[in-house]
Image (cartoon, rainbow over all chains, first blue to last red; front, side):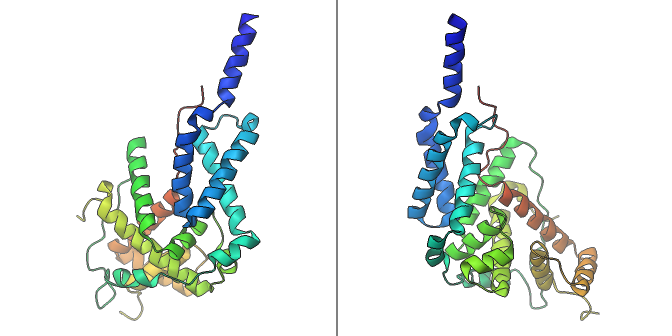
Length: 201
Length: 68
């Protein structure tokens, strides 16, 4: 009799993550804002995510809470970008010009790198990986909003460029330019702020 | 000789584009040649690859201990 009560309690504890919800919500909001660049939409989608987690709590399986939450959020964000209501909000002008000068400044008059480019070390452990991730998140936050969106749609949501063109109503050439500028800016930012970037030999 | 090879600036555009779509054959050949001769661009290529890997894994805390 006692062991079945203990068993039931353990099962309940496994499903009951309400104690962790406030901290989780804060994390999810931060991530959602970075991806969506719109605090109101971010709030809505995080609410939807938490609700879905509660509704599906029996189907969580072995995933850690945070990993599971992020996977659900990712689906919600992808669905939202594909929804009719997103259209008006996401079809905004290309703002990557703000990055153009800095990207251009990497090269000399013959198109060669002004500074030698040092390879990055692979992070050696979980701690270094998280550090690298966290620097990347900060660097992502520095991208202009629409450019950041394009990068996240491509790299985090995995949208093909054709779909990005459709959803955002931009040309393929435009998307290419935005991604190029985003990537070059991000690597430059990582170079500056991540210790594993090191210096050229 | 300079006309045959890409500049690093051009190579960076191609490296970025190659992450999204297949390059045309002549572009791919010239990029390969440039990379063979340019250590800076090889570093950039590797960095762009790392950005891609990280970008896909954003926000994922990774190997957290399994739920109790």
